[in-house]
Length: 461
Image 1 (cartoon, rainbow, N blue to C red):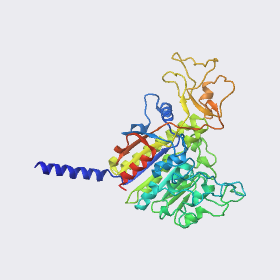
Image 2 (spheres, rainbow, N blue to C red):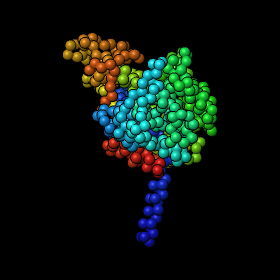
Image 3 (cartoon, rainbow, N blue to C red):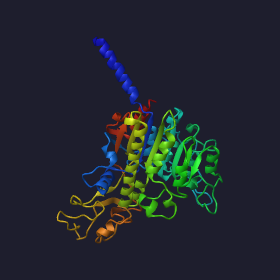
Image 4 (tube, rainbow, N blue to C red):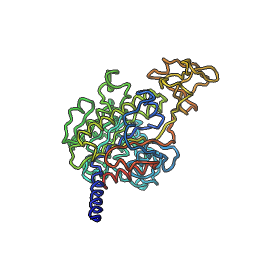
């Protein structure tokens, strides 16, 4: 009798392990979303006692972010480590650890179309997206940056330099010169900005491709639905591969500058990150074998580099909304997320810091106020803001008073400690949150490369 009970327990345990393997993985990357940015966004949206939606998830870990050659990473090697399980050198996209960064050169039009990646300079490192594709799953990448930017590129391309956007774009076009054959029949979904990397140079497209290729036309000939705005995206139906590039020459707009609030130009027609995420799930979830989807909130990073905390925090809240959208959609498709793993993390930190000792309830973008509500002042008698940056461009030689109205404006740049041309990344650890099938594996302090191993294990590869 005892032996039968033990055998039954072993069978049940084996069944649970099998049931815990994920058919679907959605990997969310908040670019530059360090712990301080998370706390500041929480206070901005929900006050001190609140929580962002993803902070309510049941599994949390701490991730080390250094790259193969740098204490403070850039986005390319950090994202590449998540996608490949390999420590990569700064500026390199999903390549072996010995690959040296080699920047592209300018063509006759001044665009970085001349790739300098030598065949002897390292080897491609297989990505989790490529593994998913090889196992018959649908795959996709969604971002608020250019579709060829460091984070999305690290899912589907291999390059010795993150700025080789024109060569990276070619890797996404099945059958074309430079195609990444590890993608099989191709990406099923790709969304972001930067159409110029995919379209030929002309007087109307001065940042276009010097080789004259129209990659969007090539993709359309391969059966892809092509969209350049929200309306065209919404019209896309499952059963076809899809590419949506919603900005001609750049990244998508900040959340503060998108949609009805700024009704003119491209920003008015660009979908939100939540809308892109929902559409991607609709298109990918038709595959019986499941899917892998990467979603990046890339403008968080841009706001921080610009020392504009408001842009960063609003985009972080939009990123949080996209995560909840994905969870809600997947709960309908896969109740209890029994077959779906959702992972949320960041590629690196920034130098954003809390400043002074603001009273509870002090608006996070405001000047610091004392317990009695009066403005706090520095040693020279001037007001200062609750958030500041360790470095960046806004470092006055002599400080002056900052008003509440100025500090909380959409275009205010927080002051910095060290003057640089732009704010840099920080080298601190970042947080990871997970839920669903296989989420129990994410715990403790981990190398960023370990995340790849755990996602691969969750897929059962």
